[in-house]
Image (cartoon, rainbow, N blue to C red; front, top):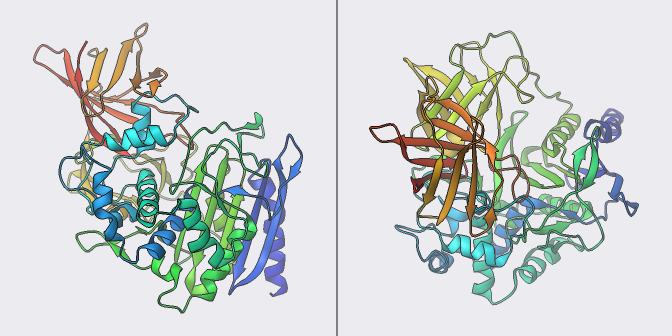
Length: 524
């Protein structure tokens, strides 16, 4: 390792705890199987004064998904053998069911159960275990797109896979992970830590900020193949070393996980077998982030450079940004900075996207946007888009531009493109009432509380809190979901109301990016 690289990594290790402040964290950087940086700081449990070390067990969150698929491929070289069993877990589904590969590639069309749980009235931090998840999944009656045609992140895809492969092999999923993956690659302390209430070594996840203070995050969700992995930094170093050691083995596990995947149309897909495929600093990457309440993780692998980075925070700072800073340090390639030389386009405003029925909001407000950037609110979370010299805006995943007299939104990572429909002036007509979704057997209550519209969900999981609705345009409103069962919320819900000739509402179509086009009928 050169002196200049050593100096850059030393600076990175010194600045990470300040740039991403919180109780504790850890980072590893490897190149060609050699550990260039292995560093931990702070506390795994601040109250019990347990230091954060490279051996500390960490809740890896959605980084789990690639390990679920590793166990799947090792146990079932042809994953489609599980398709009948997966169909049996969706007894009420009308139409074709997604297969194992659709699930592994996030192309199932299933609405994410973490999002749908909010429609069933699940309070934030409420318990959600095997019984709740099984009932919610088994109640699925429709998909929000045909399997294989689109991409949409969906946690239960990987719960279904882990349950199905366990049933198929007659072994617990925890045992499969241990024998098929962890033992083979040298992840000596890695475990399936499904119960999020506590880690066996006392490691705690925290929410809060430096200004407000940090407090232990309350988690009561039982995760399995979607987010249940517990592993240390040293375990993840073993995983990255295994990846490098088997890089030329055509049958190697990571080679199979990171093989190209496609949509049914033949278009290349950016996600497969629990791994995102992307580009950073002009080079192809594979990896995944992880986020639960109190935890953030990110791992990224750049095959052409034989370079891997793993970042672990037991708080809710931006682990992906830290990982990209580490890549920049190794490559000696500063991260590109946005330019403010291009003016904001004239097409800022509120729209709907016809296929999904979701609201699309474009502005320059809020902490997400910066100089020369726009904020797009449509998917799971707000996106930054850089304004271009031709009047378009994009970020490599989403592009907005005028096509004739219409605003076009292209999202190739989802195999989707659409002409957006402007919403126009917001209606002032009342929307209060009780609305029922027959498909979910759940309700939405909209009230007029002193001249302000509020909405709240209820169903078999409880009664959710009332949130203030935001009018967007026409009869389309947004119901915010600032807190959910775990992690971050599933995004704002779009409520598109319908009216009869006299003006009274008759129902609405509701959805967010993770759970689209659910029909509600007014019942009171």
